[in-house]
Length: 326
View 1 (cartoon, rainbow, N blue to C red):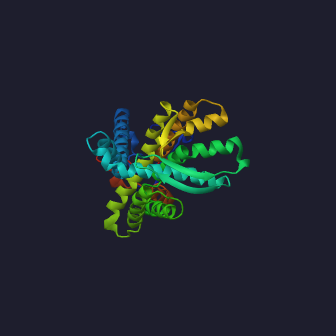
View 2 (view 1 turned 45 degrees about the vertical axis):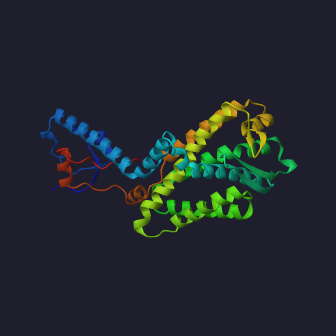
View 3 (view 1 turned 90 degrees about the horizontal axis):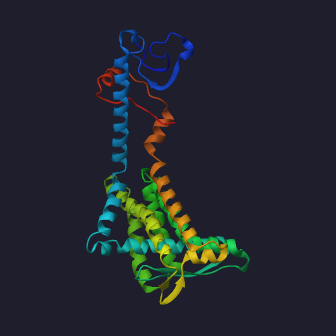
């Protein structure tokens, strides 16, 4: 009688029970009758199964990350076509707001105060804050680097939850709420209020959608926000390698890298390089180590038994064996 679940089997052609191997999912048929199979057939079956598994994993990644791939492709295309930058202009202002908000949050963590935030039409911004005198060099460096570091970390975190059911809705609702609250307490420029208030309302509306039919809009909006954070965290740092100051609000001010270099002595390009590496690393972590509801549910149930019909289909290379990564 054929069994329906086997988790420990003997090696092919081995009679020694000590040579048994542990497998996560093993078909019951084709093992006890392995004396009728030749070595070449078994090697060919294993190779074809491995190829099918690899193709199955790639297809699974493509199916689950279509929203992110579409969002990133759209951003890259718009950056390289005429008038495309005008379409991406709201996302540029959004990235500036995140950068300045990270400076403001760093000031609050150091025991300081946020006086007001300024967002300008050229995409630049400024966080007017008060820092305590006791924060020291490391505190000043933490405050100056918070803009680039915080944007990179937020982008990576948003990518981590892109496949979950609640993550995109909570993310959009949370970011939209922070936009409105910052406009209420800190943003004091007319241009900033005119741009950020509609963004906050739009994100809250997307995050509040509960109908299944609205998931297409919610998923694409969340993917655009996540991709914007990650790409901005990488591309905005390139200016730090070519200039040490820029005009912000009619006043020439030093860059964040120069501010950190003045406190910790190392050249500005060193800090810019470290921030660039962090931005790439956080993007990679967000893409690879993704939180998936399907994976959580499958891992909670444990290995799935493979029936006789499944094994016959595997041997005919019609489907790939089920594999779980541990």
